[in-house]
Length: 67
Image: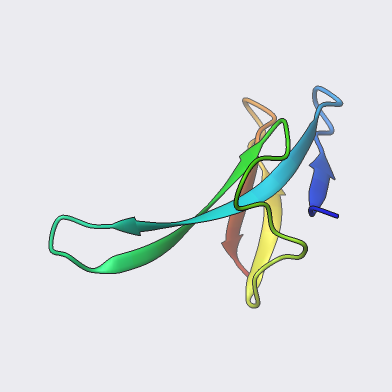
């Protein structure tokens, strides 16, 4: 089951995904993003050292490094 978060502002459910992207310099980096539906790359849990926060203006969930 994909990791999900429900927005407190809109009540919409978002699912966590990850994707490997190649930066301009050729370096690979993993990006994390939330989507409204489960797609390829859905994650079962939060990555180590990260926590979920919600943008107060838009209500969209985001990941940030844990304090």
